[in-house]
Length: 450
Ligand code: ADP
Image (cartoon, rainbow, N blue to C red; front, side, top):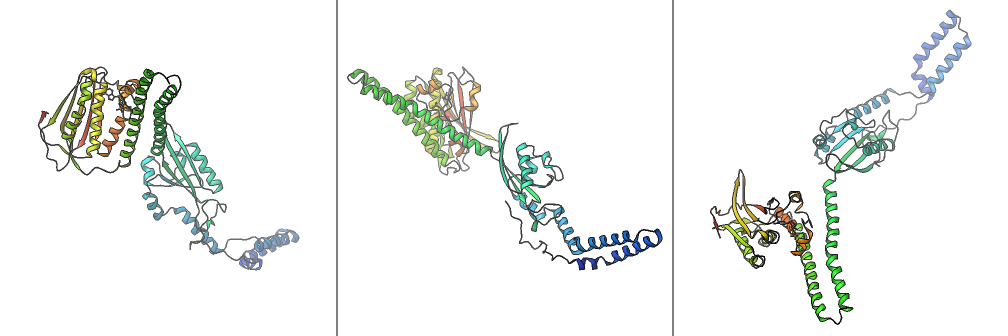
């Protein structure tokens, strides 16, 4: 709880209590007038003198013993009221405006006193003078606000709003005490104003959820081959102990499963390495055309196995872009390999690199096109999620980990690139990546078959 300030020079000095005699002296003219009025009432209106005397005694007791505000005290109280009326002042307002989160200042009755700039952007139409509940409608927030007004103790609460999209918020509601907190019309110890600071936690919560989902998925992916390995080891130790033929078969399956675990661990490590440098843009200059040619050559044995021809169309000059060679090889490899694995029915995979100039945007676009089964449209938005597969069985059969496109997306983010996927079921798929052209690049604009 915020303690009432005592150090401020605006705090009123405690006044010594006036004695009854002093108070009688201060009220002498009033008492004298009352005395004359009482005498007149007795003389001219036959009021009993005992009643007039009793009236004068009561008046003296009231004047002498009941505390009254002195003129200087009245001035101080009025000054305090004025400070409260004008608060928050310019200093406080500019400070609140400098904060990146929406902030509201309200008085103890819930009337908005100030709304910082960020709050005006987030909650359109909110203005000082309106009840806080006009702009902040979450019941738990308003209840917490009332509690802070009543107890003077700060609170932190969080809530979820479901409409229009799921959003997590957290609010810090803090009491504000004016200097000395000796403000009229307010019980001592209770806040004069309340500060409400609201934070949008949606991004953090999503990241947390992604992290926990990732750990759960990765463990699940590893557990399957591990269970299979354990099963085969037990079989080799028991029933297949003396069966060399079964041993050969089981050992080759175990090798496959171990390979699957290795690929998965390699991809997980690769993803976390890329994430670590997500904000560091590569500085070296590489020849993107050469990288594509190199990858296509490296994948030619797989293409031959799957009976697919890779047709490469590249510019005849080097295409220089800022990039990390190993990571760009990973990108091109994942895309061409996917086209071979999932689109081998189409017999051809076309890989093309072309320059694109749109207004200020100068990029090099690599497209990888296959003519296989394609991807149904409902899967397209989720393809780059970790462990997302259109068909789990065919991915496993093709030694996929479900992390390839997630790795592609992360590498492209680091390279300020973008990925687009176009596909129609039955007509193959085209994966396009755009990478910014290097400013000093020697551009090649003629596209010829490699
Ligand atoms: P995987 O390791 O399973 O290949 P990816 O992240 O590379 O994982 O791809 C995710 C999924 O997207 C694949 O499992 C596959 O279902 C689908 N996919 C990727 N590329 C293609 C393609 N060219 N044609 C059809 N489906 C594809």
